Length: 406
Length: 130
Image (cartoon, rainbow over all chains, first blue to last red):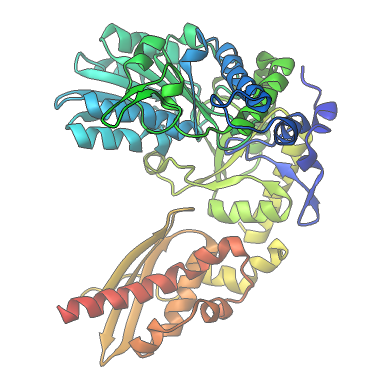
């Protein structure tokens, strides 16, 4: 199990005060805080190894290149990919999805279909809108039920021979729902479609094995799992990446350039044009080391424990409505509303108590509309959160009721 | 930032719970629908203009206490004013009309209604020119 007491000492930011109160950081689905080990890795990269990668033959460049390449290898092993060639570093998870969507926007034809779900984040909706618009392909949606879970029967029905791709979130950033992505990938493959998984909310929170899932593409972000911002990951099966067109063109992504033409570099570099985020990669390696040491199974257990406690205590407050399934079926993400108080006002008052949550539509406006709400308050937990912090949240919510006179 | 109690003063909550000028105007001259994409505050203003002045104004909307109370206060304030004057109302003077001091993060909520009123008038003037 995770010992939060000793672990919290690794996170400098957790000891700061906000509006004179101790910071209670419950906005981890947006981004997580960074332990000293990650901050130190970035600092040490700039202090001792900074150089460009894959170019010069001097010592520094060699060290920087090694750190950068090693981060790819570590990522491959973290999600059980076949090799580093299947790991592309991007700016963020959004860009990773865009690499695939861009390729589809070149290959889809009128009459083809893409299947998404009603619980997708804008980042797994809008790139596909663009691909559909450019090709005349059609988008279909897998629906969710009253518990915020996918209606699997309906999903099976809409995946047909016309479907080229099924793109689905592994875990909803609003409802927390963990989707059966292995089963969905199988359904897609049975019909000859590819399966892409948005894993931005799952890789940080539970063991994820791309081979077991059997998906073709998977995207996630370093900053939601203790790593630096500005670094995302696209996993793709090697034979598919070989046939995927790059999204960005320029230096380092080429093999040979003439005045007329260029040929692409080997995987994964053909997708990584220009000077990449080397310091970010060094920090990301340290973040993965940190999580490996904790054990992703333990991370999942810890979050589940927090989610259970939070759901129990939240349901004790009159007028609080929680969205999504029971704790066992979700990550450490809980969205809720308080009767007669706008989520924005709830978050403002919580902020004045030093509690950081997110209030709003969480980049999932279609889902909000489906739930019949303008937005929600979202508390999301990570490895350093404690039961006491959840109790602090509950106390603050009772204060919200008092201030807003509801 | 101020204490939460100072931000949600009685006077503000009063405007939020019982807003002035809430509703629609049929056959209005100017209308504008705007929202704040960050938090989903939403507002629609309806204005009746006579002889270059705001003869009547109403709004509908959904959103946080600050955005909706500010709409109540803003519509109350521009009623009867010359449209030229309304177009010139600065952000600062709008914020001063509120019974509370708004934190930086909430300024957008507080200005949503004023911006919608000004955009409605500009749109109205644009269509008149055509």
